[in-house]
Length: 270
Ligand SMILES: NC(=O)c1ccc[n+]([C@@H]2O[C@H](COP(=O)([O-])OP(=O)(O)OC[C@H]3O[C@@H](n4cnc5c(N)ncnc54)[C@H](O)[C@@H]3O)[C@@H](O)[C@H]2O)c1
Image (tube, rainbow, N blue to C red; front, side, top):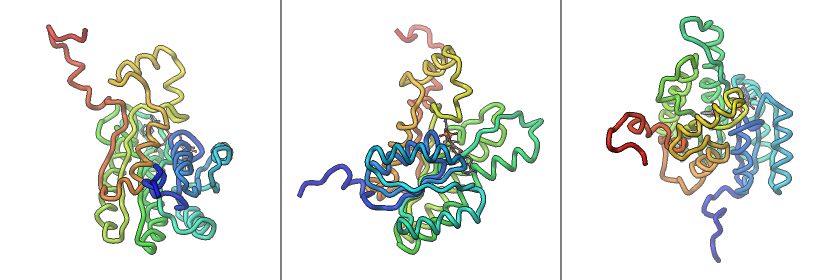
């Protein structure tokens, strides 16, 4: 019998949980995982957004459930985990994507803003990993994929606590990879570059800014949620069964382009 691409992924009938599935990158991940045959539980604060993703998944013949959930609240996450186990079976894949962006200069950033950002963008990743990880440990099988950012490695002016939280996500993932490898659980990170989503919509309202942002990227365009979801799919799947504690940057080459920004007389781009 010949193998199809879905067979290689090994995601058919697996249960997958995606946080932030009501918009942008989380939505694209939910669509991609369901397209590979997974049953997807989608969590988000934005119930309307979840309904829209649910409809798109149904239209492509996939299976999904949705639950309104604040991923930074351990009690709400515990309820979501119970839903997962009861309705879909033990969680085999967790994609941590729910996040917020609160720009601000550090010299004036209120402590409450700092705490809020760390709570949603870092602590919630830990809460979800720990809670859904229990189901993976029992099954002795699972894959965690955390959405960090190129900001995890590169200081970004006026980004408040965002870069700090994302750097924490990278180390959280490496810790989980080492602590849970003996339980058959892998943990990896996908770090998007500039990506067109609800989060970045305010930066993309001016056509000239969009053009200049695209021109700054070696592959010549801003990323789309699907670009990120494809890397997430790979790391979630059996195709990555020997990969753990790693990060994949999906940014069209942006963070590798620093040497292209300096003048080199005689070697200017032709
Ligand atoms: N868009 C980019 O350029 C970019 C770049 C790097 C990293 N990221 C990261 O990708 C992830 C997805 O972001 P996006 O760009 O798709 O943004 P988005 O705003 O389109 O989606 C984020 C989703 O998370 C949900 N959310 C926020 N707080 C929540 C909470 N406490 N509980 C549950 N859901 C919550 C929001 O309702 C929203 O639906 C985030 O972690 C973000 O930091 C985005």
